Length: 282
Image (tube, rainbow, N blue to C red; front, side, top):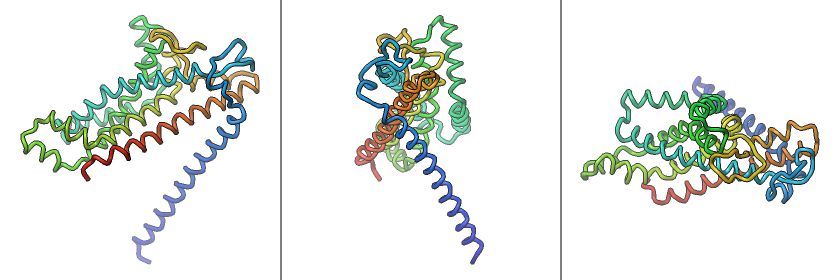
């Protein structure tokens, strides 16, 4: 057997081992969440807010945390998209492979790797500087900072896959760089852009550390930008921290709800990418 065949066999074995390991970890996490959370999941958990004595095992649900997470992640994703899309288009259309583009991409990679608790601490310091208390707006701003590098790098990698001939053809026909970015790059890469947005949303909705100091927590439904808001990750944390088994089981039910939301986001991104790709030139 030749050397390259041995190397191929070893690499194939390593890839299969990695696939089995990742699949096992995913299956174990899902099994734990479903087996412990499903028995405690009921209609009241989804449709009611915590009532008096909820954290002692009495009636109520986590509707406040569900809606709070959707508001936090939705607002953060919307603001992040307003910054990320222009930045990704600028990197693709104007600077492309210049040294400045490499510096910006490196900075975004570093920001992507920063722990979310650091973003939470930075957001908290920023809120203190401007006199803002823990609120929905503070959580949205912090999640925006967290999602911008994720979303921008996702869009950037997708846009770099665009065939150079399409851009050159648009420029040869007299289109400006801005028109090329808006009408060629954006339209052709729309499936990947949507996927990057939804993946950043999935990261935002499941993050607890970034909103721990900035969004606060409350048993009320979100009703104002400058008031505290609950979130599912923090609801899970607080419920697991109690000494009552019934409340701890509800924590796993909350984790199951969060898992379903993240899974629905992933499936939606795949469905939209497949549907939007019909109009892409291949």
